[in-house]
Length: 158
Image (cartoon, rainbow, N blue to C red):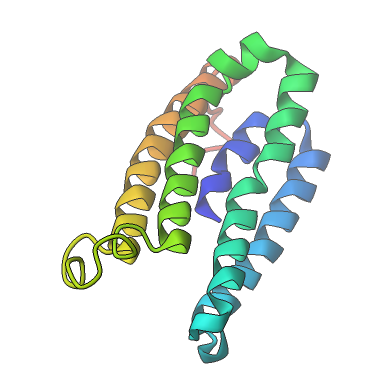
């Protein structure tokens, strides 16, 4: 859910789609929390459901990204919108989820990856790397938004 910060900054001056996208991500995030915390979904038979929910959560950013590219143009999306960093973040998240879903590397090396480098660990490594990339991209996006708006006025400060 935290990866949807770019939606806020990208649609800062267009509040209706921003609000809709943020509501959708909140609903998807709540579903992801339920699936990850409910013991029923912790069983092996629901592994694909868990992966599907997390992939759906991650891929839900495609629609706002396409909306931004169509409304603002590819050049603005790639520069000001920091689309390249966000695509790298998405690639890291998806790679981690794919390794987790496919049980790589323990599928190919049974018993060798029980303590180190098993798929849940790799998933978390890729997610952490994606979070760092995301932070960098959103920091740049926020900086562009701040520069365009001319900074904070006295009434905006606390």
